[in-house]
Length: 173
Figure: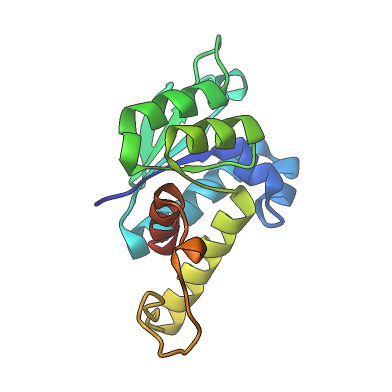
């Protein structure tokens, strides 16, 4: 099953130690840097990626939606927040959606609807790790294999179905 990663753009930028200083100097440069990084990640992993920004801060020359280097960029309408646009997109994508945000309202909505979620800092780490492994030519090991053990694991240790699906999607990042 393919994954559609829906990213709260300004949330990721402002939570990040890498993007935040760039954004403070020049907001447009911060957005461009994020999109460049996501484009490199998309070349490595091939997931469908959409970045949603608040439309109030959109550059006047930019349309409400577009595609830059394979990354869909969407600015929310002036009468709605990016959070509302993300919720609407996630509801449309259903099981394919992986929502990236540290906003509790967005995370709680997505989790309660059964969509996979990951917070901004963990997603940034996944991007950095994928980029590093790609440049070094390292193959990622399969973590899902069986390891021999005498330790008993009964049903009480098993994650719920929703959490297992979430973990599988995050492992694909």
